[in-house]
Image (cartoon, rainbow, N blue to C red; front, top):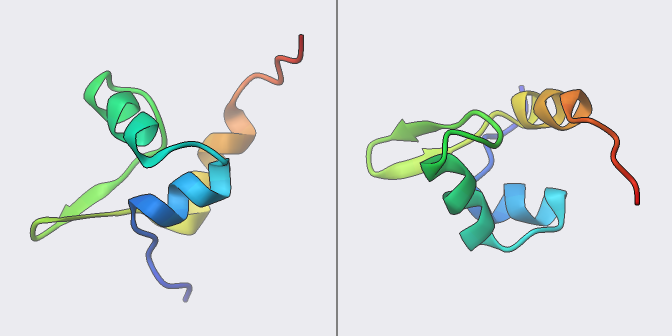
Length: 59
């Protein structure tokens, strides 16, 4: 089993600022995460699946 990721791990994987990840969550968008106590954690497989499901928009 892989370790859970924190917000900074997800942000690094996606190449975005951590604040963007929190904004997405507040708007109901972004990869699924769960609270573990007061900490936000993500399953790496869920993040990768979410990413793969995003439209490939290149302009």
